[in-house]
Image 1 (spheres, rainbow, N blue to C red):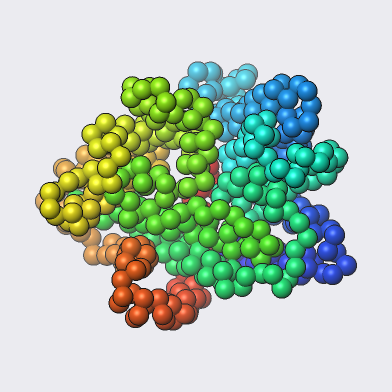
Image 2: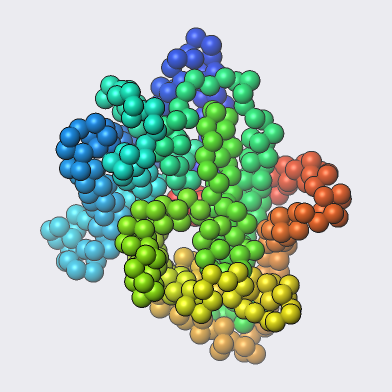
Length: 473
């Protein structure tokens, strides 16, 4: 069920009405669970059983990790089951294509397994829950007073299945989410926050991303071979803005919908394209995944506590596995390795300096050069998302150099990319200059006008409906 569909809007409205009925005040958790099950079952009813099974496994593992004397066994078993579930359904096809015969036997079975929507996100949520329960980082009230297993399993199911974050995050921390589970009041809804989150989210998705996709489509093989250098570069940067608008838009919609039901999901994007280093970029892009990888993988590997060489290895391994998490194709591993190498080289050369590119007294200029440098490298990295076949991505790069002068430099039909990318640029610049007097006086003071314009464009200039990019992960 797409966030940008009328079916979803109807589900949210119906759920909110039932959710806040006075005589159902004590049953709000059940209302959200039923809505979440309906949301997930809309596309594939059979996979709902897998989701519920995952929730119950994590409920048992986390409960045992907190209250049973064999806590280590429960925690280990919970993490292993989550990873096996992810490996079987997400990477079974990749592994069989690489190592097994796909025409018969196990290889054939693995290739026919469906890819459950959101499996990467809800298995990571499960791992977070189990590990936090074992480490004692769970909600203090829950650990001081031992609840019944049924009470714990209901909360766990809601944490795993909560429909605004189910398919593509944000990955909420279990401690924060569990402590937020309580009876909610309609009067406590922060409607300005809900309105702003939903308007900006739907604008980024429906007006920016869905329109850009109709032009970045020409990046696909073999269409890009007939494009000039300027067109190829324009599409690369257009796709970079599309990726941001699509995923940041989803996250904002999820945050706004969750707020309607009284839950605060964590910020997932914080203006990543003003980052002047790769380290800063990953503190701004897909923040909840970055934090998950940092806390549960990088630090567990030793972090930066065992010398420079080990730090570089840990960074590279973390990003490689983070890349492979995005999809069952070796190109995603290459993408993760690419970002890992960028982080390693940057750390080796620049340390923790804000701007890796230093131009002496020209601090402001060097800062913008650093921002542009990071943006360009990140944008070319997205080629592996648009063209998962590594040979096609390499050919695209080759065409950038070889197509110069052989065909028209920039196809005029692709110029609307600039128009639809402009709101993302403005969005970042307004934040960057938010403390300037002229921004405070002439822009932020009249921000309701911008929200009105965005709402108007959502209704009049939305692109063709399309699923969110990160649903495939």
